[in-house]
Length: 295
Ligand SMILES: O=P(O)(O)OC[C@H]1O[C@@H](O)[C@H](O)[C@@H](O)[C@@H]1O
Image (cartoon, rainbow, N blue to C red; front, side, top):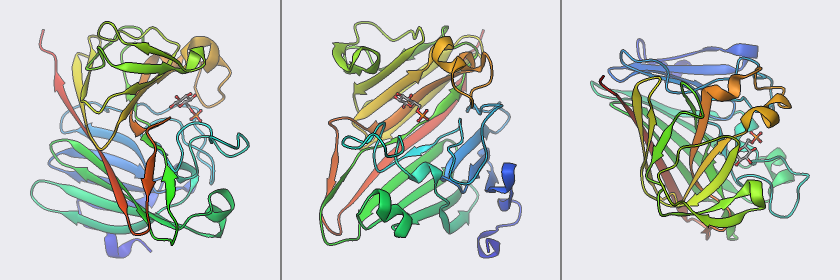
């Protein structure tokens, strides 16, 4: 089934955990693994470096269940559904099996395109016709482009996020530069609107939606690395870590493991709704790069 997309030495498909199909991209930029369920990046090891992403040791790998870690795709709504709390949080893209659309490799990059279109099961949750493409490019950086196209006859709205779980030395010993002076909504205080006065030094729990399209840098003094996150067409940056108490109640976060990640998500969330008329498209892009902090 994946044979036409296999590129020897660069793109390979195999059964992953729980027999969910996975794809590995390799190239001059390093290595990344992607679950075809959810089009979810599970790992990204730039050449000669450790994984940038965190993956829970107790994650479920079952059809239709969200994988905890890597980069889940939240779509066509971010967080709880605005009108119906019975619908799955963060939409259905992260729990659906995507199709492989294309693969590509040259001297600089390795690329994979995955796609999702409306189906009888998506229509039960969301009545619109759409095409969603995630392109994953492994080069000097890891670049994700998420394109939504309205293929139906009526307008629809979406919210979305690339819900990235970065692996960190300690979640309470980090600095995130680029959010200072931006407005945010604090979910832990019923979405109270606040302004980030200083550069953010997270003290979990925290759950915030920042209004910003600017890049951010995650500085990790323990892992001695600086991760730079650039965005295009993303008006929200979400920062989340559940902290010890909430994480203790999450079956798919191993005991104490919440200190090992911070989520910094490129999105269009809350009021930053994207409205698409028939045949219109919207492409949100996120690039992730790393550099070592010298002693
Ligand atoms: O447990 P889930 O559905 O993967 O969501 C995890 C978290 O995702 C974050 O993006 C939200 O801001 C949090 O409120 C939420 O708890």
